[in-house]
Structures are given as structure tokens and as C-alpha cells.
Amino acid sequence: MNLLITGGTGYIGSHTVVELLKLGHDVAIVDNLANSSTQVLPRIEQITGLSPRFIEADICDRAAMDKVFSENAIDAVIHFAGLKAVGESNDIPLSYYHNNVSGTVTLLEVMAEHKVKNIVFSSSATVYGENNQSPLVETMPTSATNPYGQTKLMIEHILFDLAKSDPEWSIACLRYFNPIGAHESGLIGENPNGIPNNLLPYVAQVAVGRLAQLQIFGDDYDTIDGTGVRDYIHVVDLALGHVKALESLDKIDGCQAINLGTGNGTSVLQIVEQFKQTAERDIPYQIAPRRAGDIATVFANAELANNLLGWQAERGLVEMITDTWRWQSQNPNGFE
Image (cartoon, rainbow, N blue to C red):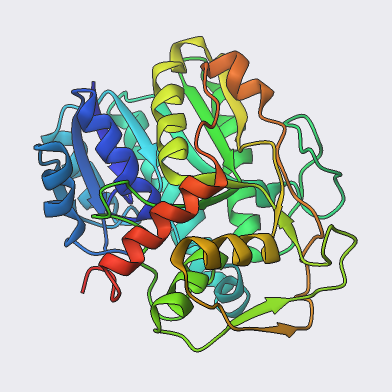
């Protein structure tokens, strides 16, 4: 297939590009490089022996996107591009609504004009809000507690309405949980700008000496050790979930939300202890107050992904952390 990957130089996007190239798909990447670097491209080529086409463009730029679709034969889109930091979204909500929601509308309008009506969307488990009990199922009511989550939820609503209005669209909204890990080669992995927002890159940067200590937000939750429990999924399993969703679009009637998770919960302290064993490094940490909107336990029911896509997560926690440490220890400053 001829595929367009928006945000394809980012963390999840780059791992998905690797899996698509390995399967022989023709891949073009569109990215504005706000959260990523072109330094990932030669590493993708080193892993696969193949080089995706790269176009530096912003999905909010209608003229640029029209040019992309006019100059490239495209059968389907995997849409990763978007701002993604929960805390930052509270500080600059208009940027998040403009980039994520308006940008997606522009992308969809250009797709429709060029009669490309197959899309896999990068959604999030944040759309389940605070009031659902885990394991989380796709049929549960949705809500959001921050502007980032609201943008994901708004885009889902847009996609469901679009599919209702035009039966030619086939859309998968992949609600994924907590991606961690890196490619087994150690060549690509999560490379956040500035202080990491997510747990694993923060732990890894403490282990490698870039940061002094980890902050753990809350140790008084009703969990196994008082710290928050999340469903951590290896980024390669997640990438393969996108491949399976793409291959299954012809089985999807309209728009379908699908969880991608392991179905298992792991606490923050369990992650820290496993990382200490794997890296053979101490991970100093400090307990900080709970963050507003954080939930004690979040993990997926992933039965629909198994039944509809033929997908399930295969990599366990030890492999996730081993691959994270290999990436971080071999690339202590990321791609720099």
C-alpha cells in the first residue's frame, strides 16, 4: 500500500514506519518536527535497509497538505501528528485545539478532496476520563479532564460523525494506553524535548545521569503499593497494532474505537524496581503530592483488538524495560 504517516518521525510513528517498511509498504512521512528530529530517518534506514520519503510540512497548512496528496499516490493515512503533553495542554490550550483538532479537520478535508477515505487515528485512553472502572472497554462512556484529552475526544467525535455522513470512510480510532520501550536495535526510542512528561523516559534519564531524581506523584492510592497503576505496552507491539488496524480497515464498518493495551496493570514503584534490576543502577526518587486528575488504576480490556484485528501484545515488562535501557544507555542524549 501507498501510505502517508503524519508525525512519522516521532516516537510511536517512527517505530510504526519501521514495521510498515519491513512489510514492503511504500511510506511517505509528513512531520513539522515540533516534537521530533530528522535524525531518526537514517536510523530507520539502518534498521530496515529502506528509506521513507520525508516531507517537512504542517497538517494545519492546507496548501502544503494538498501538495502532498497531489504529488503522492496515497491509499491510506496513519495519523499520529499532534501535541501530546497533558501539563502543557493546560498552559496553552488554544495551541492544542488549533494543532490537534483544526489540523485534523484540515487533513480530513484534503483527504476527502483527493478521495482517500481510509485512516487509522492515534487516539488515547485519556478519553475514558475519571469515572470508569478498569478494565476499560470501548463501549464505556467517554470524557476528558484536560485539553489534551479533550482534543483526542473531539477528534473521535469528528471521525464518528464523518463516518456516519459518508459510508465510504473506514476509520480505526486506536485508544492506546502507556507506550514504553524502544526498538531492539537501540537505534530508535523515545526522545522527549526537555524534561520528560512520561514515566519511563524520566526513569531512564535518572538512570543515565541526565536527571537527579524521579518525582512520584502520590503514594497513597488504593493500589498494591500506593502508587498509580497503568497499562504499559511495548512501542513495537503498539506499532504492530497500527499495522493490523490498517490491514483490517476493510472489515471496519464506519468508525471503530479499539483499545491497544496488555490488559495488565503495573505500579510506578514496580516499574522503578524492575528498572533498577535491569540497569543495575539506583533510581533515586521523591514522593510528591498527587496530580489533579490522576486516577489510581488504569488498564485495558483488549479483547476487541484480538477479535477484530487479530492482535495482542506479546512483549512483557522485562523486555519493555530492557529495550528502554538499551536505547537510553546507547543514546544518553537522545538523537543529539
